Every structure is written in structure tokens, then in C-alpha cells.
Image (cartoon, rainbow, N blue to C red; front, side, top):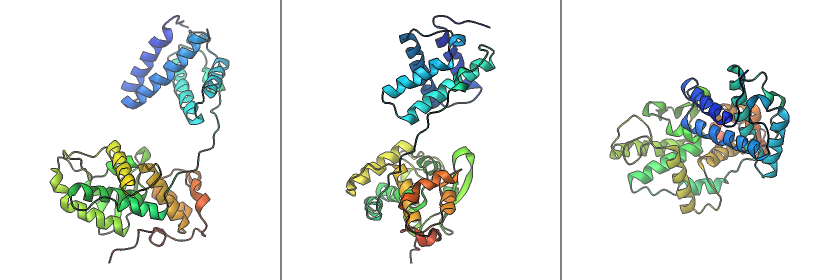
Length: 305
């Protein structure tokens, strides 16, 4: 069994990040998050005079660190993320034979209640999606983006990942690649189909350089960050006096569907949730019998004559 004194933890961190990058194919964002979380943990160990040898760190040290994070006022979700990074790090050390046991196995993840999702009223949602001006290509594109987010409850990553071949306006469907590479078909309401049809007529003005559905001014795939800016811009224009993000529109879609009487399991499928318990967060606003289907439930799903 090897011992790592002084900067041993930092050296092992670099080896761990290299393993994540080259063997696990982790993204740059993931690597940066692991580095920040683990360096924070190592700093705590140094500050408290706790072992710097990975073999000398036990579950009590980890519990001290979690208590320290709680006193710092971190959200339980942030604490859970940091603990997850620590678990992965010690799992790697054990796999490499550098420690005999993983101390993180004896530390449970903090339990926390998920906050209720934020959503818009029907009037606020209409004000938002109708805010983009229709006199230029950008406004037409932005209207299509907002209508699709509200109409179908897509995650922003799913929306920007759409290609032209993924939409079928005749059938009112969009093919979505969700989390874990799972594909699903999602209905698109009449208003959103109308907005998308108008956008497709002007899409060529963006100088397309790829098959992405939504393009930026350089003809490349629009980024999730840009969509976030678009949502905020038109929330202000539409005088929606709440913080609005693409995910708030996803919550709004689910809330309005449920309040309109849609079946909970149907909403689960539409949102691409793996567990029904995730979808059940929206039941606090439903006063209906949950027996209706999409076309009757969604306020903008009605077909355009």
C-alpha cells in the first residue's frame, strides 16, 4: 500500500482527472466541476490538520466536511454533488489499489426535498411567446423557439439538438433525443407548428452551414446559452415579472397540461422522465381528474384552421 504525503492528494487528483478524461470520456465541464469540488475538500483537510494521506482519511473526516459545508450555508443539492465527486475519487483510488477501503461508502447522501417548480400563468406564457416581433427573421425564429418550448416541454439541450429531419409539421410531431440517448416522439401544438412553418421559410436567411433546426446569425447551431438569453429578452418585452428560463417554460408546459386534465403518465412520457415520482412534482397545481390527453389539455395545442 502506497502512502502519499504532502501534495499526494493533488497528484492523485491529476491522475483521477486524466482517467475521467481519457477512459471515461468526461466533458470539460465535468472535469472542472470535479476539480473544484475535490480541491475544496483537500483545502478543508489542510485547514483542519486532518490526514493528507488518502489511506488515513476515514468516514468521520468526510462527515466533518459535510457539516462544514452545511455551516457555510450550501444547498443540500450542492453538498450532494460534492459528496458524489469525493465518492468517485475514492472509488478510483480503491480500483487502483491505493487504498484498502472507500471511506465514502459509509457516508449517506444528504436527503433533501426538491423545491416546487416555478411556472408561468397561462396569461404570462402567452405574453412571453407572443413578444417576438414578426417583421424580421430573428423575431420569427425566436417566436418558433418559444412556442416549441412551451408547446412541447423540451429541455433546452433537446431543443438546440434538433435537426431539420427531426420535425414533422404535417403530423405535428418532433423526434427528441433525451437524457441517456433515449429517443421519444413529442406532439407539437398547432400554434407551434404554425410558428415553425414560418421560421422554415426564413431559415435560409441565416446562411445555414449545417442541418441544425435553429441557427445563430452565423448559420451554426444555436447554443443553449443563447436560447436562455432569448427567453429572458422576451420575458422583459412581454412584461413577465418573474425570472424566466427555458426550464421554467418546461415546468409551465407540465403544469398547464396537468391543470388542464392530462394524465400524469402521459406527461411523464412527454417530458422524458425516467421515474413517475419526478413528474409528480407538478400535481400540486392540478384540480382535474387527470383523464384528458394532450390535444384537449394544452392551451396552445388547438389546431390552426
